[in-house]
Image (cartoon, rainbow, N blue to C red):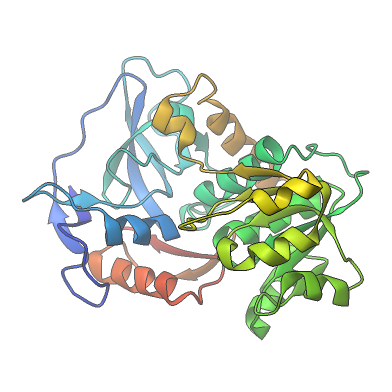
Amino acid sequence: MKAIGFYKPLPIADEQALTDIDLPVPELRPRDILVKVEAVSVNPVDTKVRNSATPPEGTARVLGFDAAGTVEAVGSEVTLFKKGDEVFYAGALDRPGTNSEFHAVDERIVGRKPASLSFTQAAALPLTSITAWELLFDRLGVPYGSKTQEGAILIVNGAGGVGSILTQIVRRLTGLTVIATASRPETVAWCHEMGAHHVVNHHNPLDEELSKIGIPAVRYVAALNATDQHLPAIVKAVEPQGAVAVIDDPKVLDIVPFKRKSVSVHWELMFTRSLFGTPDIQQQHRLLNEVADLVDAGVLRTTLKEELGRIDAANLRKAHGILESGKSMGKLVLSGF
């Protein structure tokens, strides 16, 4: 099968940073389904792994997490899907990625593709939807579907992949006031399009930006980017007994200043359930099905922003380059081999 991989970490401008390769079709574990991949999207984790991981000598690592496609075969213990089903999912950190014609994935972290979306539109959603959903409902403990709740949430980097879908989920499934951060006219407009009540500039101290819109403190903070840089302002901006959820990778995160306010701090990594085979791993299957239902009901929408052509090394290098520029909005998707 066709696939795209890398042999060693290289700058994305190097043509060898990602290369077209041929690999055997993967064998299935008992709970696996084999998916014929129709579309993939690219996430910051792809660039992080490409820049930091060195595969064993002479072997290539295949990246890619988000995918949408059709079930081609099922493992011996599969109960949730059958051949021909259309699915979408975000894969696992410790298994080969989705940048391949066929991909093996545990059925318990796979959802049915929204019927109202194309494969291309659907591929934009899984990883960021899982991250946003777990961050909001599992980590921060915001009540699902309660529109009467008061208070506000600050979403740092609202125009990014996670921020785009988190803004929608908060706006449509909770009663919280949504304050997103963005700095360019086009990202500000995108945040409003996703449903933000307010947009503030993350190039300025966030607590000062909140004061400008008459909301001096927020109950929740979704720290999606540059958390170490924003931390002093977040300490000031979060309410006493509030909560902060973090998804990025600061080298150091000193949370001692939150003690005076009794603020809880949570990590969110959507790969935790699959990495550790947690007893509730199938929650991601249920979560993605719920997202699909909400999309088909018109409550949520795809965050696809740009299509970059077919799935090959050249187009994936372009996608990685856009992500590494720090100027992407929504999701970048590639379709077909």
